[in-house]
Image (cartoon, rainbow, N blue to C red):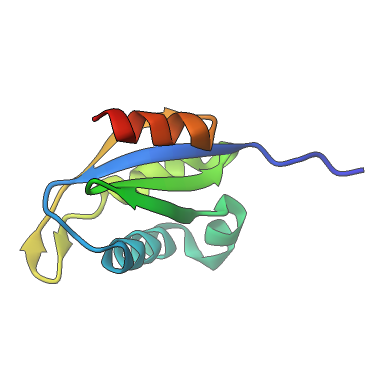
Length: 103
């Protein structure tokens, strides 16, 4: 019997307003450049939702540090400077949605 994989939810806030699709593209591209396709699959990285210009990312418990590293490596979006700030890492999607709704 296989165990259920533990997930973590990372709340990220960009310095500029960006769309969900462009955020997904830059995060996936940065992760693929650093860790390759095998690392991307093992991380199980997904962008769950955008609320008030904050994004909720889902990843495996073991790959949180790699996801944060790839997020911090993003410095520009289509030639414009951008910074992505990790606000909080939580263990449930419910808590992540509560934190994003509060701010």
